[in-house]
Length: 127
Image (cartoon, rainbow, N blue to C red):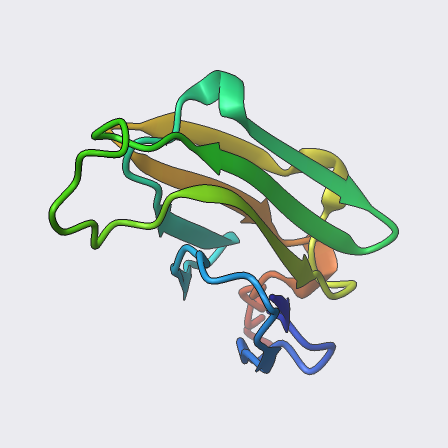
């Protein structure tokens, strides 16, 4: 799935096209004053089976989820298999400062805003 996360106008939007893969982890995006934060539930994903790359304005998350019941599942609702998610990152993000953490099955990706994209308080002088 390829999505545009942050447009040049600073608004957080998502537009997506669904790939032909049946397992697509879901991600949420929220904004703070200094960054955008992308979080996704990745149950069963081991750190060694996860890879993030940022190149030419695109963040790509690759991963693999091994089957949990070894073929003996009666019902299997969690996604299993390889997945790939790509997000187009706008110019408002400082790509050199992107950081990620996988903790308790949740991937958190910090997308820091460039200094010029952050709100700035203007001092009011008195005459």
